[in-house]
Image (cartoon, rainbow, N blue to C red; front, side):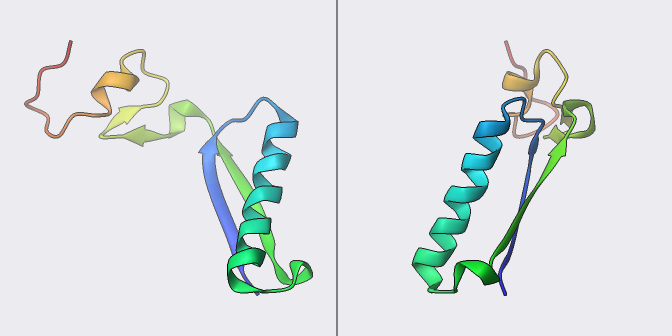
Length: 77
């Protein structure tokens, strides 16, 4: 039985969250042939202040640029 776990920032739109779960489930079914009733999928929504890329919190105003850095020595605009 496949279990699909998706971690993401909080999703304000319930319809988008539902669509994401439906589409991922459909893809698993299409690719593997596993019956739909054997596929579980769930979302873990994480507050941006509890998520970091490249050591930069998702709630940081500079997240978009700083989270792309390759080292701590890099300068970003």
